[in-house]
Length: 305
Image: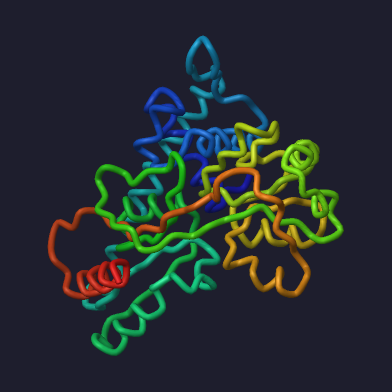
């Protein structure tokens, strides 16, 4: 298996779970829900082709293979983190910059204040370089902790939480709904009970950072990696949904253009809306950086407007 950014994130999740002694105990360290953690571990087990841990009524325990993998993972991640520190030290310290991480497909949301904040920063502090990375929820938190990001803007819903060592404030809210193509079997079903029966047999794709209350109503885990379908981004969910083979959980602002064009339809409501509250997040700063503080305060002002 060749390592990618996704694989490294899965390894970090496994290390956090193993260190904490279980999925529930790792929630605070990772800042993501237990279903999301379970899905990440299942994906890693699929990549490696082995079972890493036993979880059930008897409690959490690493398998013998899991213990061997943990030793390798710990050594690998220590080496990577040490190399990252050395590489960061090579950079030009005189460059004024602010590094922001965002999850994908936020830019189409009219409530997202990041664009006007960037424009304000450019006008007020033209010598500051702002770089933006498109990452998933977990990667944003990891990059903050590794000091490779200054600010992250992420959606929090359901059991997700802001890590205790971070400072955060709400920016705006995003509502997501189940969508499908007009020719999908679920498209014409208006009765909620009948729709639940249809969805139980459907392939469902959902972006990974959203906690999904429908997991309790349907057998398929929307956050899982069943059918070999990658579901790490909203854009991937959109591809699968537009193709007609899947029902997708998509942000309403993101799906609006395809709904207007007749390429997607919103399914009948089955539950209260799935709302993600987007937050600006940073680690508690040890020292004041004028550029970073300017962007942080501009976001805070936009979030309260």
